[in-house]
Image (cartoon, rainbow, N blue to C red; front, side, top):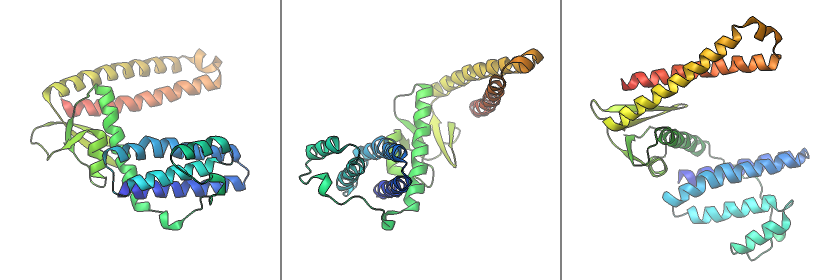
Length: 251
C-alpha cells in the first residue's frame, strides 16, 4: 500500500541521514534523527494507519521497521534495545545482526508525496475539530492526490458528492484543500467561533500597533523586544486576514 511504501522510504532516508551524521561525529544529532522518525513518522502516523487501514504486508513491515529502529539505537542503548527486541519475540541478539544500510530500492517519491498530502489533509480536519469542538462524523469532499482510505479513517470524514447550496468549510493545507459540508448548527457555531477569534486578533493587532507607534517604546526598548512586537503584528495581521476570509465563506 502507499503507506507501507512511504514508511519504508522514510526509514531508508533516516538510515542515510543517520550514517552521514555518524561520519561527521554528530552523535547527538544522529540520535535526534532516529527519535524524530520513530516518534513523528512511525508512532504518530504509521502505527495509527496500521490500526485502521492495514494491508496484508503491514504486520511484517511494522515488525521490520521497529527492529530497524532498535538496531539504529543499539550502539548507544545496548541493554534497553536488546530487552525490547526479546519482548517482541526476537531470538537473536541485535549485536549479532546486520546493521541497517541504505537501500535505493526503498526510495519512493510518489508515496512520499501522497502520504505528505494525506497527512496534511488529516491534520487540517483534526485542527478544525479541535477548534470547533466537533467529535462526531463529518461529511466532506475527498481532495485529489491523497490516500482516500487513510484520510477517511483517520479524519473521520464520510465522503460525499458536492451538495448544492450546502455550507462548506474550506480547510487549506498547503496545496491540499479539504471541503467539509456543514450542518446549519455547525455553521452557526463556526461563525460564532470565527468572530471570537477575529475579535482577539483585532485586539492583538491594535495592542502591537499602539506599542510600535509609541516613539519612546521604539527608541528605548531593547531591539529584540521591538522586533518581537513587529513579528506579533505581522502574525496577527495575517491571521486576521485568514479568519476574515473564512468568515466570509459562511455568511
